[in-house]
Length: 138
Image (cartoon, rainbow, N blue to C red; front, side, top):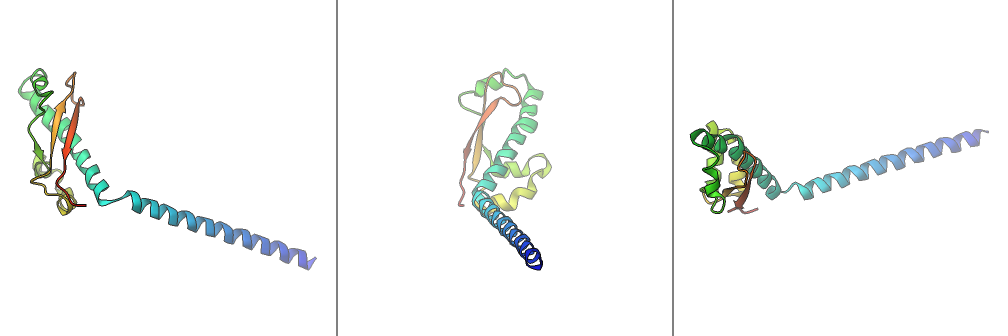
């Protein structure tokens, strides 16, 4: 009987060790996956996309509508509005995104990188598409 208990105890230890090894492998795999997907390029582009949408929807569009109607916006459907350089993103609205400047400036020339906003019918606050022009080294 003493042998049977010892054997069961050893079996529980083996299962515990296997579970710990599997968990460790999953943690390592997750860390590698995060490193592969969290590149500087992906981080910078994601930040720029978020800033660009905030700029157009909550700043630029409101200024246009305040000074006129949405009829004016339709004139820019083909040509798009004037270029908005990354430095403008970092300075607009009392430097709302100044905290993003170090990362963006590390990889991109904020004076050469720009976006162009193209309004889409029916010319609402979220009806637009963006052309991104990056002058960056990742």
